[in-house]
Length: 281
Ligand code: SF4
Ligand code: SF4
Image (cartoon, rainbow, N blue to C red):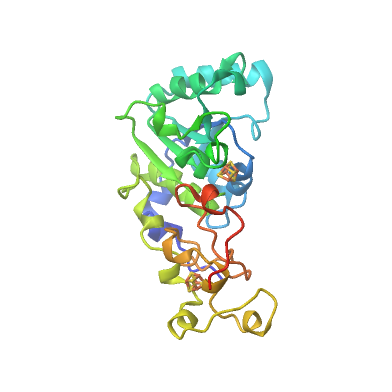
């Protein structure tokens, strides 16, 4: 059961909730991505994505989620740049290829698209480890020469990183809602992540930590030690080094499902084993 209260976490009072502010315009540009971040975005329960879209944000452009497509969608995006100059949020998903041949949108490279959209945005949010750190496209030999979003936009652009592969839906929505209600980005840590969501490691709030403290470790995923819910450290759990709120929110995520934390919110996680954590001795 969730212990998460979004109103408390992003400091929204009942009175603020009653105000009928204009919804926050959002333009979502997808670079080299697997669509996982958008899939996650659709699955928030606190508040629901539906409530968020109907009441608080106006998702003006997303290749996957917009009803319009092709010229109609592109024209609409251009009109938002003008109409909401300095007021819209640019959400970026995926690593950005430096070489233009890898991804074009309506005749423009995705890199140019992002640079243009960031120019007049109120803030830029990098959704997912790919746009935050380079992620999967930048892993290994990085054949597309992909980079994170901060590498291509001016340093002074207000930007928040919301890493994870994918990020937690409530964290994506919580970050947007903070901007909607407070008019600015939430407080960030030194890695530019919203502090409210990334201030502790998964380990510090993990429900299996009492087993860790007693040195009771699962030896495999399907023996008696696993059935007893012992700590997954020996199976390669990366919770001690992963800053995220999966466990503190009390939602059923990787560790609750019986799998190790894979540290998907950390820089370079694909090069450190990705989805395949190595067992420890
Ligand atoms: S961060 Fe993960 S889920 Fe999101 S686009 Fe990259 S690979 Fe997909
Ligand atoms: S399962 Fe992972 S995060 Fe949880 S206590 Fe064990 S090592 Fe820490």
